[in-house]
Amino acid sequence: VPGHIVKGKTPGSLAGRHGGTFIGAGIPATPLKIIFAVFLAYTSFQMIMDIKPRASFHLPGMAGLLAAGLGIGIVSSFVGIGGGALIIPFLVMCNVPMINVIGASAALGFPIAVAGTIGYVYNGLGHALLPPYSLGFVYLPALLGLVITSMLFAPYGAKLSHSLPVKTLKRCFGIMLLLVTARMVYT
Image (cartoon, rainbow, N blue to C red; front, side):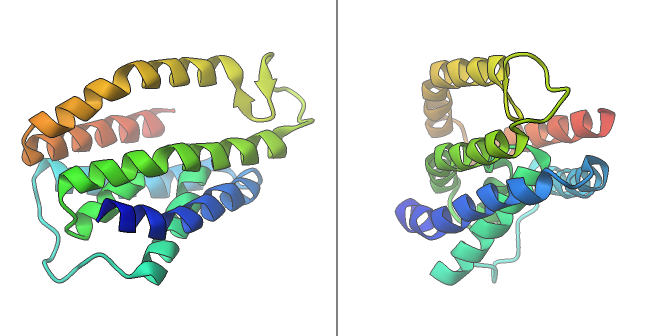
């Protein structure tokens, strides 16, 4: 299942993420943050309370995965988050087993990040008032810190995903989404 999901979602996710950077670079952040914060809070609540999606909602075919990937790529590029924050809830709503959700999200994370990075570098080139050590809209010290910590801790996350119960994984992810929501609302 994860291979089918990754194969179906990758083209749309890459196109959406990269294309969304062109749109997102020109849209005020506040309306997008409000819409996204409401979505994240709703999704977090469902995961923490272990509210199950309707059983009739299943993983779509390749065209549906492509469309979902496109939408997720665009939205994630607007709010500056990794695609996993949207991929995981989508796949959970499609009743995909949590271990497969995590695997598919991990496989999609890197290419989506690269597409978004390229788009925001390009769209930010030549903008005034960017801090030193910026390449377009990408702040290189933050990028370096994220890459290093992700590489160091990803193996531990993979081990935890195999050893923790699914309900615990959902609750942990739901809490993480609530923290992201709170930060977005606060800033």
